[in-house]
Image (cartoon, rainbow, N blue to C red; front, side):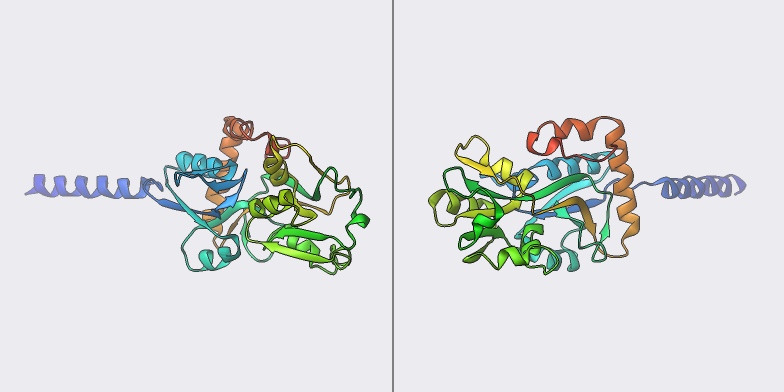
Amino acid sequence: MRKLAAFLLVAVMVLSLAACGKSDDGRTFKHGFDLDFPPYSHLNDDGSVSGFDVELCQAVCEKLGWKYEAVPFNWDVKDAELNAGSCDCIWSGFTINGREDDYCWSKAYSDNTQKIMVAENSGIKTLADLAGKIVGVQTATAAYDLLNDEEGQKALCDTFAKLDVYETYTIAFNDLKAGAIDAIAIDVTSGEYLMGNVTGYKFLDEVLGSEQYGIGFRKGDTELRDKVNSALDELVKDGTYDKIGKKYPEIYNYLCLGK
């Protein structure tokens, strides 16, 4: 009887220690991101996902022993997806500036700026030349917010003939190439990706605004935020952050973690 009691006591202690020592292994981390915002996140033709933010999130999950789940969505429904619990965060070239109190933010991991993209033969050389022109922008982006902010660039926007708002920058760039719009207000990193090997397009020298990207969690979700921040620090130390960044030259020089 004493042997049985001792055995049961040891068994209980082992199970207790296992439970106490259990990490987040097996957790599924739901990565919410814009389905068409290269080079940060996008869906491929075969349904797979790619982009700097996708790869970095996958590396965080691997570091923490979590299962990665992609939750792509149209950017204008990001808050509904987050608040409904469909995803654990919004991580897709997401601007912190101006939204500091709206989310529980990670550390900033990338700097960026917004500029105007035009065709080189458009005759548009300065922001003043946009007067009477049709300018495109993606909905719910930092550039969109700037152009509608009295303390931002609304005065400039008021000089446009029209501000066309697009679901994605990919569609806006196609319209720019087709001559349907005269310019695009866009994040430089995204614009450089879209221009890629396409010749005949450029940014104006003047900057609309500057920003930093972070990961937006639900307000109060500090425990999850802190775990992701710690994993990001480890990825900086072991060189993974830098390695992933080098795959995306449009982004690499803007990366700011560990600097």
